Image (cartoon, rainbow, N blue to C red; front, side, top):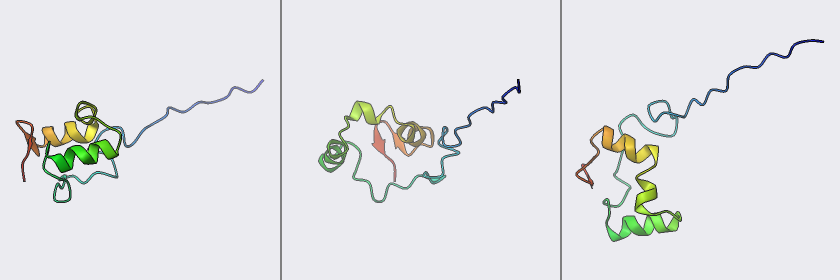
Length: 75
């Protein structure tokens, strides 16, 4: 019986630094101000709460990169 080889599954987009959909310097020009009514409406249109947004890698990356400081966008 021939032994089947298995290769590890690699998710190249797992970390924001590797994600091809995220720029290294995250741009907020087209995103409404954090927690503004327009921003909250954008989240609602995605079926998402602010708490759920804060769990996303893009939010965590924005905080890490100091694009969001004290829960406000820094432009």
